[in-house]
Image (tube, rainbow, N blue to C red; front, side, top):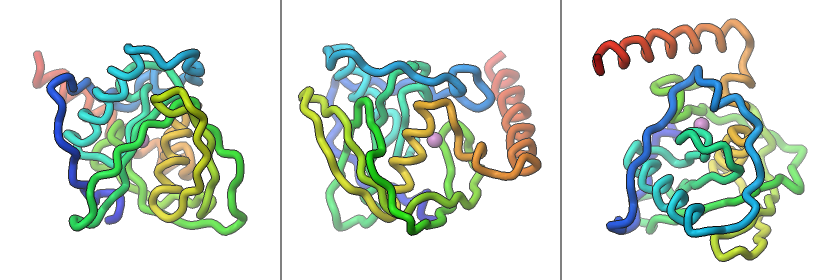
Length: 190
Ligand code: NI
């Protein structure tokens, strides 16, 4: 399952802190996130923590609302072969500025919906504009798994989860499983 491929992680910095990942259903995962007004030290720290949290999970993408921050930014690293070095990316205020007519289907998963996977069809290629951590605007095209990941993460910033692309019955089934999982986790903590 491509979504499960684990990238090699870059060296860890001592300033990185793993944050708690929210599990669906949670109202914070359904919010339309606010744009980041300025790249501050807090935003740089959040980006570091999100990368740490993503690699630790492990996952290939993580959006700010998943750690309870309703700001428009996400991190990702879709490098999946063990020969290549890690490619951590931080995208602030990302926007899709072009998408291909060609579509592709990936078996998607989400760190906020553990152990649940389903095929989602999306544009196969997208061009995205965002603000980098250095405050500069970047434009880049993505294809294959990277394109799927970018769109999945931008969805998070609009309060949309991959299960929102599924038929209602399938979505409700997964949501019921998550409600049960959250009850179990709460019980274990008690
Ligand atoms: Ni997700």
